Image (cartoon, rainbow, N blue to C red; front, side, top):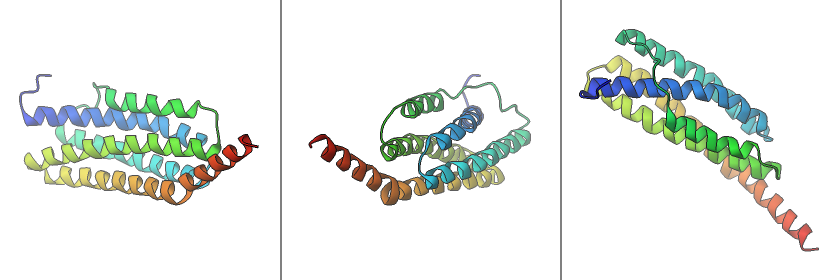
Length: 174
């Protein structure tokens, strides 16, 4: 597709998001399984359900556009997920690994927030207010997930990781 109009770019970016969300549907269960913190597992399971809704919203948008959502692979999400999957293969203290999983998950969320913000802006520019509203709903959920991850990192996971690190250091120095 030649990107010579905002509408073509908009459709291309929507396809990119559709691919990204479908990749995430496969990655989230692995992240939930790898997490040791129950709160983190719960956050991933909740976001998995939201992600299913994100895919449905995108399919609804594509129906309105009379376009197929398929035909593009989101290489950005593929890379972020591959990078995050590296932490799932590591051996270490549970809470430290959970902290790493949160880092990986927040990279995903920030990617999605940037993408949804852009396509929502395109929808507004193109006068597609109903679609912009759907995209804003997803953007709100992505932002909410990011905030949940922030709270978990700051109040539960990172402090536990620090304690485990200090205990491991104290043991090693004996």
